[in-house]
Length: 215
Image 1 (cartoon, rainbow, N blue to C red):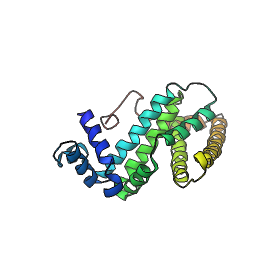
Image 2: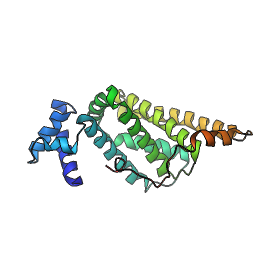
Image 3: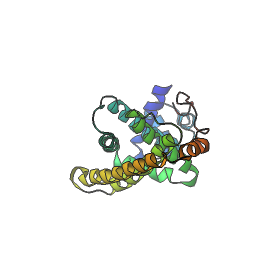
Image 4: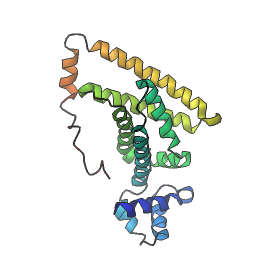
């Protein structure tokens, strides 16, 4: 089933430049691989939003595989390298098409989740073992950095996207300054306990997964 879904998505992507990232592209892709066009609705019930999520998660999966073999270096350098590599795994035209779909009000929760998943892949890939409020704040901050980086990258005309890499380095510097401030703040009496009380109960166990996470 997963193989058929992947084949359908890949076939649909060839129609995105002409039809957009939507149900029409998915149905055309289904016909290309010999499936009834309405089968696309079963595999991608939310049409273009589901296809955009599939594209995004494919890039995240490639990033995770790459990070598994990149274990050396300072944290800031590994995060910067991961962000740059994640963009290498993306196709600008598909990102533009996906962004137009995910920007719709009904799809914005999914867009936020996808950004969060990328940030989690990166922090988990470098072995982050933080708990409670630190776990949330690191991923929230990096989600914002990745979102800003993608927007910058889409408009970057520099050779080999060198301006984007400089942009990443500046944003990572901001992240590291925030992490230092946060670590210092938690040394004050009561701050760590307050953070744990306000956010610790929300987070599900790290081992818990949902069918949507593994879709």
